[in-house]
Amino acid sequence: MATTTLNHYLVIHPLDDIAEEKVVTEGLGPMPMTASVRWSLVSLRGYLILMLALVVYRVLQLGGLFGGGH
Image (tube, rainbow, N blue to C red; front, side, top):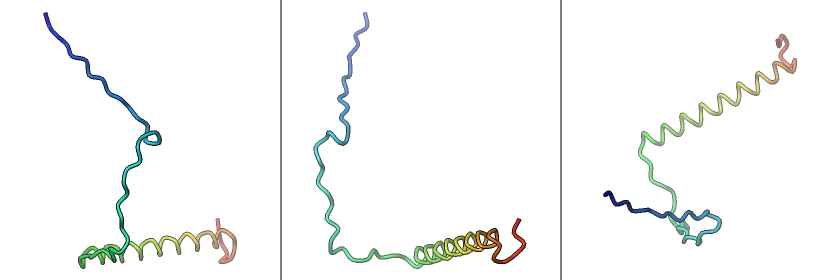
């Protein structure tokens, strides 16, 4: 005869749970970055600015500011 054990799990919604202590981040200062991380973030920023400029250009082109919008 096989015996079985039943596992009971109590599920608590996060809004009903006890609030946990938050991490104090005041006074930590800027995070140190390696050169490769810094260049990656700079290139990502440049890419996003370029894409935003292309979207603005396309919207203005479709609006007829530069003519020939299809």
